[in-house]
Length: 153
Ligand code: ZN
Image (cartoon, rainbow, N blue to C red; front, side, top):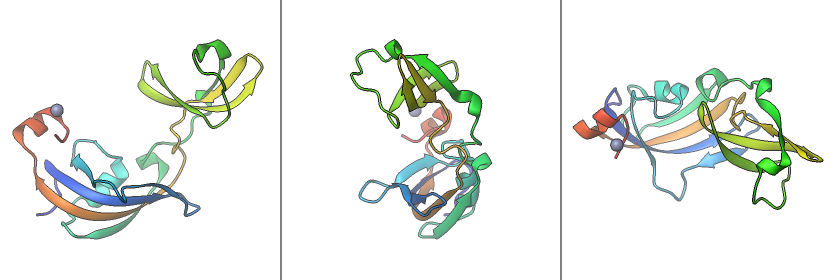
């Protein structure tokens, strides 16, 4: 069975950045399972998987515009220290989830200046070219319910 719209696909992957460092991997976990054609995974990877078969191995390079987008410097903002209620120590590199008008967003602390905390609202992988190593493990037809919901159950 080949990957096409409305198939449920499972695959193992290793994700590296341009420097060859491993950012994420499904090794030791269940494979990632998604509904093809529903925008559940980044578009560059979904496009590369189209038409592929179970058991196939792929090396996929995805540019930022088909992954997490380019960096937007206007998403770097200063927020008051007291917005981080209940957090004793705030240090650069710490990540917080915040509810924004655009949904849940990950904020990364850039620096702390007195009572102000500078945070970066860009996705941690924005601006990066992603290198995926993919092994497709299973392809099946989606159920009616999965199609109606637009995601895998
Ligand atoms: Zn559902």
